[in-house]
Image (tube, rainbow, N blue to C red):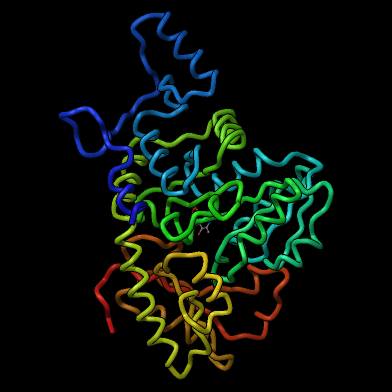
Length: 375
Ligand SMILES: *Cc1c(COP(=O)(O)O)cnc(C)c1O
């Protein structure tokens, strides 16, 4: 329970009297009492210290959120970004350069493929996909591999990976391993503790928790943590005080929201799996999920996501009309907010290596919100 307790107490103002959360600081310019004070601040900054000196470099509000995310991710340095996709790009920008080779898990968040095709390949980076297994990773690595990028569990159908085993290989070869930790959002699993070099999250999802802010975070230790921070400043990536404030407020209730999402999603999964037109329910907490044992070993719980795979004779239009008739589930992208969402998903387009999906039934992703149990 230590993490849950710390999330209530981390990054709170120390002086009294004080508001319970650090107030919103909105500023570009930071003013100093003298030139000497300004120069001293610059000097501390150049020695790697986090100094309040200009809006783009952060404010006490964003520092507070950084500290909370660092606690959540069990890391030293956290850099905040204006979206989860910006967080992914910061990792690529910092750790790759033209001529480098990168290995990506096939089950990653689909827009990563867009980054690969739209930026990385034209920039001169070579990219190979691996199926998530240790064996396939070993055969995909090259002498010029500069980054291994993965996400556990995978997007849409939650394929599990043996993260400590992947990390052991990465560390043995001195290749950084970056993990998209949005599914666990730090509260269910910390990649850095499992041996990963970098953990990133779309704070847009469970950290914010109310679907009203876009946010990304990247957490790492030591030199790589510093390099990520420098690169974010070089690229002019920063977030506003209002967004940081709302995200920190979200973090305070992350643990109990997650428990409720998990509970309700398990109940709904149990009901759905017994419906005649359902072939299976993809959800790591289900005992028949292929990665269930790894999930039990590495994660402390589940979240509100599940994906229903219908029988092969179910027409896709029937799934569409089911979605249109839902009353409590809204139709929309994303997840992690207090509300329930439904979205048909095309797994074929989201996988390069696993072509079994071409012959399987239509899939519907559900995010189960905080409504009391409906069953
Ligand atoms: C949503 C999501 C992202 C991207 O986050 P945005 O804030 O929407 O840019 C990245 N990774 C995963 C796994 C996500 O689900």
